[in-house]
Length: 608
Ligand code: AMP
Image (cartoon, rainbow, N blue to C red; front, side):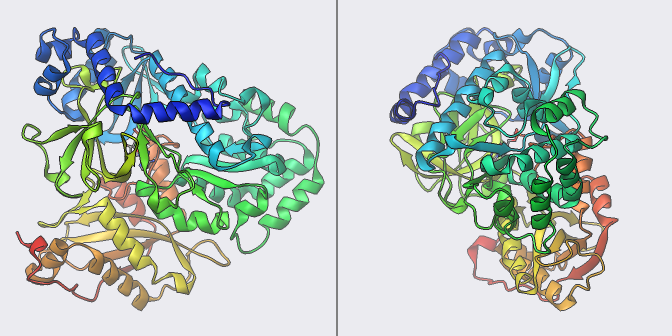
């Protein structure tokens, strides 16, 4: 299948294309697989299973479903200089580093030039979908805060960089629709500045100067957007001074970025605008600041599904109730699905996987948690895209055009690690709610807590703080096995909804915090409560409140170890002793649950 093209200006044509893709999902998937096999059946990886044959039946029968550890040796060979034919017949241009890790290092996925065309198609088709729901977007600008990360060169000479950095550095991004009409507030030079602090400062400056033109604001993930709001909180005086003087701060030393801002954005002093922004930012409460600073904004374009859901209250607080729109679901392996009803509430968001992007299969998981135990894939039921059933949970398995996993076991039938729930169909194409990432668990005894369980429990507990004027802004956890029995430790960063933005020196109410610990435990699953209640094999849950900024430091640490700013997601469980130490050093209060959680001995789901 050739890479499809989509003219984002053609609303009707684009809608027809979506209709064709969703009506013919089964046939398109078959064609995609056939093409991948025809191209790649001679590669070392597929040869081993298919012996030169390229039928899809053989493929599904002979080629195993694998995860990254089986692919890694091939990727390592590629990174170290073997020709790309071991994986794919398309020359590999680069390695994309994913936010997932293997053995503490980022995973790497090979990518080709053609993949950039496919991504361009994907981004283009998002535009008419949005235009269909929100009128007049073409009459103003978009303040999208996008960032790149410095890349590394592997011994083979192939660059290794995050998928978004790869895209932003491509001509596809530079030539994106409407770019030449300056409909984005950030010049490419500011986005491409590899110093994230300079980049953030400059992009905010541009957004503020053009505030009256801005019709939407956003970033890729909610966390990056909020990080920028926080940066604004710390730098608005300096930003206003720049606007007042019509001159950019001396510490912005990135040449192209400085030049672009000075010549195209800060062409003249604008004291009136500086006064106005200072008046807004100088108010004690920052509630609704996004709406106040960018008064024509219609929505916030950020992903708030999956682990990003925890940022919704804070986004609502700063956004003053602006709709939060999650437009897409993608990964380093390939771009996956789009949200065809972008104005749905975040909790209702489903993504429709586009059948032309890759070949998709689905490993059935018995419910949304048994996946963690699944290691052997031989007996697992794998179904095609059009055969999934509404209400069922699946782990996503992809076979991509680049054959990323193909080296030995590859990006052929590769487990992305995401658990999805089928919520319905758009014509023949299923729609999925993102549930969680596989294997993100806390475990002390036979209990197993996944990311979604933790989010649910934390969400319930944090409501106890809200009447007292506190918001939970970040959290993470680890299973502390240094004591006997081990126990769950949650790190919480809090901020007040009024006045000072940090929690230093504010006396935290022990009784309330202890109730929060108990509320988390009460919301965890029956096995956990059995371990705590009957077995006493898990100790009382602990909340450690950390100083404001602790999670920024954690992010900086992760970024210094290879994560990218755009793709960074706060790890909900941390395993690295250094990361735990980093948070431990800024703990301002420790609280333990004082109640043993209720457990029903008749509950079958807790027996073992
Ligand atoms: P990376 O390969 O580092 O870009 O990370 C990709 C992963 O981010 C996916 O496999 C998902 O786990 C997560 N992700 C991406 N898009 C979304 C989304 N819209 N909602 C929830 N999680 C997402």
